[in-house]
Length: 264
Image (cartoon, rainbow, N blue to C red; front, top):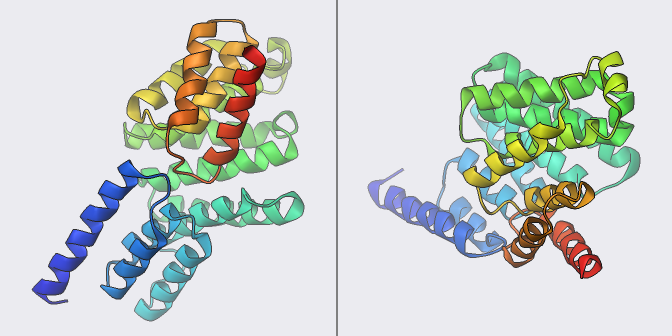
């Protein structure tokens, strides 16, 4: 790639970073521009993922792997493939969603085997296990819950800036503590703690204040436990006014509006 093309790609990538902070959904046109400029395929896949074009992200990664002779065990490719399959699954229901989550789990697991120090791979594997556990029922999937716990913690141990891992752990503790403590102990989940819920959500929001789903889940917790109605309202109001950066932010904002309407 010539110096001029490198400079052009750099400008586009800087624009992508700026756009990510300024708008709700990064432009598909921007990702297409990166394609035309011959940007790094991993950066391209990330751009398509942020533009909610998950199949294009997958196609970009698969085509690049074929062209460059990359093995299926390339960790940087695999965790991104898993991320896009999870995102696709979140837009589906039933067995179609589960099939994508299970495929994502397999890819992310291989990514962690190939590169055990890759925090993104560990986090993506935790998300995949978590989605499967939610689909099957957390309390019917104690083994999966333990794997979510392990890999989310592993991601945080490798990188102290993983807000999604904090959200995952907060959500996990929130789901599990809906059961009595003695039941959790019998399932080997006695480490689940109500005190950990707010701690992890607050940590996630310190790392990234723009996490809409984290704010709504945190508000669910504070409202259900009658802890702080002022905090609950602020979490929900902020969630509504933040730009949606993930497809699942959109239904989360709808939920936030409904919760505010009921609170009055």
